[in-house]
Image 1 (cartoon, rainbow, N blue to C red):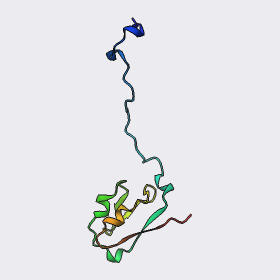
Image 2 (tube, rainbow, N blue to C red):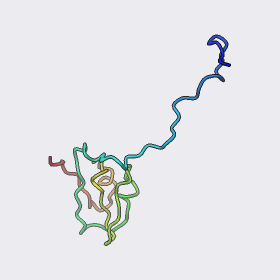
Image 3 (cartoon, rainbow, N blue to C red):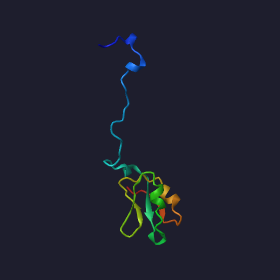
Image 4 (tube, helix red, strand yellow):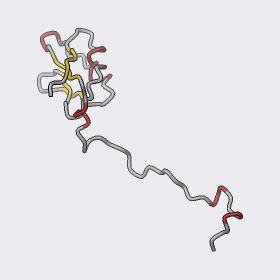
Length: 97
């Protein structure tokens, strides 16, 4: 039996804003709107992995040689990796259209 609106309490309200599935960017190319792109000078790289550790997007992966690079499908060009690199391997350059 449905209650009259004046008889309802907070316990009778339907639960709203429930996240049933976590959000993800895996299906979207979120890097398409960046204005800067990372460039690498691997001759300076000590393979420490700090760029991967500090990347807020989790888009930096290790290749077969042990060097780290950003997957540009998801990289947003924030420059955190460049700021955290202790040897200056990464520099941020303007994105070419």
